[in-house]
Image 1: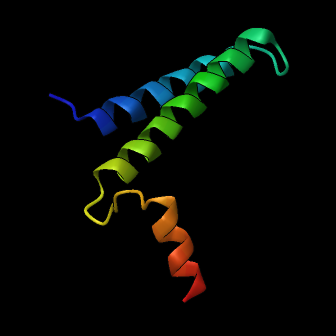
Image 2: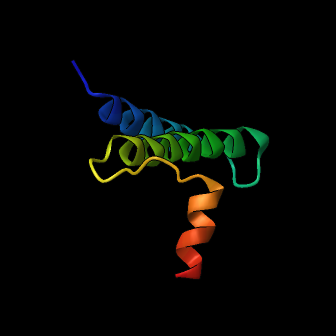
Length: 69
């Protein structure tokens, strides 16, 4: 079974390949390229969310207090 990352990479490549079948500037080509970028962005977000160094958001009070120090 493919991982989520692998499925996203495959979808991005499939969309880029489909875009190549259409002339530059066409609506279909732009939609396929957009889908490829969305899959790549989802992959980046997933990597960020699953990274071991991810920190929970700080409250605004803590954020401003840290900036004053």
